[in-house]
Length: 212
View (cartoon, rainbow, N blue to C red):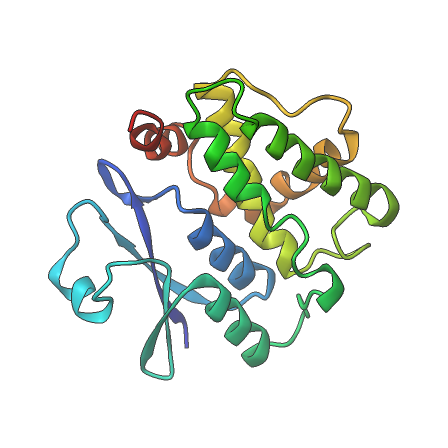
């Protein structure tokens, strides 16, 4: 039985996968675990009635487990790990929160209109910490094998690279070689390529927040 999953559709293209990093995280987990799934693409700017009935808050991703729709990528990934333990994507607890502040600091820097507000430095500090960790531990956060923490962070770094490159002409410093190698190894995985949103979708998705 294929699992049903609701994810964001591309803006202006209802049949193309949209730019939600949390949806991609769940899709990556399904792909890495080889769980069959059926995709429901949802237009979030004009939410259909059937979707609002199963998700009153109007949020994606949503996965149907045992007849019940479950929201929140953290919860979904946890259930998938429990129901489909092979291959294991469990992250050892001591590594589970690595890189967890990168997305927040990226958004603050992306929206920032003041070059001296410290938001760029805050993001750099988080990326440097990740680089240091990968240097001693890598190539992935928990060592040799990819785990849930990488599948969560990869899509966020993909958004970071595209959005900051486009809106701020900013790139991750070359000196952070371990971060660059990490991104390369995640972005080039077959399942990442299969589940990623197109660059123009990512840019269109962030534009309203940048111009707010």
